[in-house]
Image (cartoon, rainbow, N blue to C red):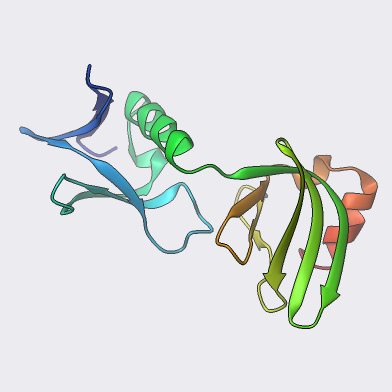
Length: 153
């Protein structure tokens, strides 16, 4: 664990305490964006990096919770609950999906494959840069699993 603390103040801004220094911070995700909870650049109000979080596990429980809350508010990742159809077209892959927020159509380039995370979750980034996540692919219905089986191993 690293000797930093991330917390909110009464003004509802996120702060980082590192040794004796305190910074009001913003969080910027670093590449690769397909790992939304890794490589987070914590930056002060002048946009200087004051700390790099390589993985949330390096933080204490309260800091992890506060950072996760901040990320949830600032960057929404759509949770896919069903894959209805996948059609490959000229240079594009078209997905008809159901998310927790409703039915959606998304497109990716044919060369852009879903990314399987270490925890088994699947991340799909569409042409607009929006992220879609399947937390537990094994819990999808049989048709969804069959449709995805071509694109994930």
